[in-house]
Length: 397
Image (cartoon, rainbow, N blue to C red; front, side, top):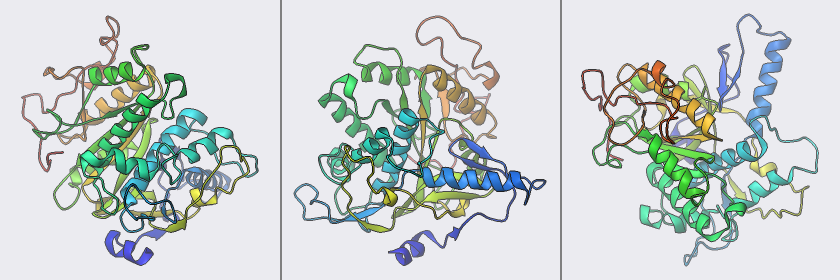
């Protein structure tokens, strides 16, 4: 399976490159500076990075689980990598929400109950809320089927559908995914192409609906499917992709090559670090009552990296905002990033669907106050100040 993966994705490198540039891992910076190379500070930073990387939850192919739906399929080997990559991203959102970004896998047992509960939710059976079984069922309308590969956009929509179905089944206080899910798409839901727009009005509405009309704001998971070129990522987007890893809200990227998805969690210069779902492991059934379970198959100590420009242009970025202030900070950073993108933004920010007034990112916090929507950041243009749209290399989502 590894040889098949490397034929599709290309050879990856193991470890950390000889570069002394900063490493960004899901919003945290590890400084491997030239001046400190070889001293205690550099060694400490590398050790901290490795501990952080190995604490991220790994989801891989599994074999021996109950058949999916009415099929006879009991393994997702060779077709389930996008589903596994997406499970990893959502698992990190749950980790950040329940245990915080500073959480690291303990070296001793018993483990945190929240940690075991999160892993249990991704078990390989219909009884686990976010299993591959339930993802396939939720994504039927988007082309998901056991045994077939799926792209990032359909995967994001499938999570939106699964979250909605689980929300309707369970009381608000007991939500297994305690956050709204917002799939950010282009104008007219992608029908007209162009950069996706983070619409503050839509985000607020998703939170309001998630809370069953009880709160104006809740934690929110943003999924941003993108197509950044035709055969490869347009180089104009590379700096912006790198910069997303500096966002405190960053959950990484679902990306790879067609038919070979990975979960990208960090960046150093032109290389990205990723978790690889392409190893086949036996199914594991974790009980929430066993805080001393063997969870080693859910983590990886092997650090792999590939060139960022080798990724397929079809990918998806995730962000988690724990509250309104965190969302406002995300919008400010996203607006600034788009403003500095030289006309090639990954996505833009707008207050409502019918906003055309371009503003500078420095003004995004100037409008605080007013009604529920007016205390959010302002609008970013989808084109330049003359109204010219920048849609090179964009495809419909």
